[in-house]
Amino acid sequence: MNKRLISIFLGLLVLIIVVVLVLDFSSTKIENRNANPYEFNVDEFEKVDAELIHYRESKQIKLDAETLHGIAYHHGLIYLLQDSLLKIIDLDGHLINSFELNDEARTITVSKEGKILIAFKNYFDFYADDFTLLAESEHENDTSIFTSIALTANSIFVADAGNRRVIMYDESGKKTGEIGGETEKDSKHGFIIPSAYFDLAINNSGELWVVNPGKHQFQQYSLDGRLLGYWEKSSMKIDGFSGCCNPAHFCFLPNGDFVTSEKGMIRIKVHSPSGDLKSVVAPPSKFPEGIHAPDMCADEDGNIIALDFDLKMIRIFNLK
Image (cartoon, rainbow, N blue to C red; front, side):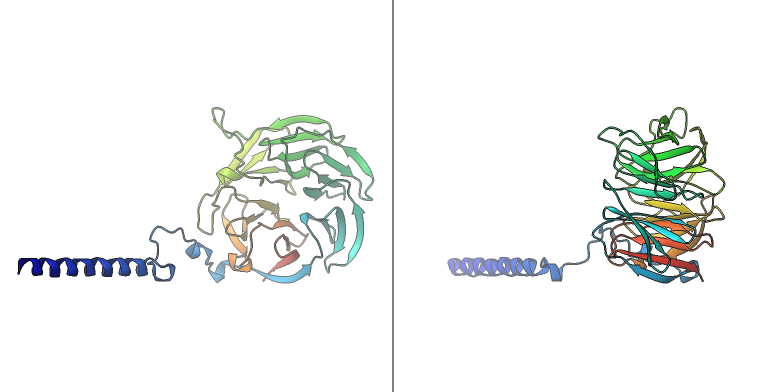
């Protein structure tokens, strides 16, 4: 009798173990798993209040290009670095002129007078408005990665992401100094550049502003390299910047407002000179399959011209 009871007990135990194993296997299938409570989810932050969006997309110019590198604007014309070319097109996408480049360009800017600066990996070329070469800088070291370039009447400034510095030049292409990005005398760091996103620009008042992307910070410098001030906005919310290195690109509106674009959670926004959010230009829903932050420039009327690297098109946004 005892042997029979023991056999029944062992049989039930084996059955229970089999049932538990089957249930456990079924529950761990991907389609049956419970949501991970620790999963990082940005859906909440991708939603943008419609009242914050003061711009509408008015035009798209599709580009037939293998690679796109950068964009600038001057007097009704768009200057586009495409493949191994500099293309000059109007706001309807019609080709006005085209120039072959001898190297892979990285970034471009055009002065008020129409002078053109094109930066390559570790040097730049300076052209007159008719594309006559005015100057060529010396090549920097192999670790240099030039990501942005700007000029005033007498000076040229280049963001070197590879060496975490801003290099200063005169108009002949001769180096005159460097900016390291320290915000305080006893600061232990300067520019924090986790990846090759490092932008700078000069506004209509002649002020030099540089992004310190690892700190989500804008820093203002005098034209001889002295720090004058800074503002920063670190936040996942719509009024700030997040991730390893944002904002990725920026430009200025005619009134001095900052137009910013971000990678990761792609969006374009307008901030005041003190850093306050003024408007959303394009929320993340405008870039559903996006990977790269758009490069940008603005025209005289404050319309924002964005270069969408993923869709290979120019997208123009106007105030509503």
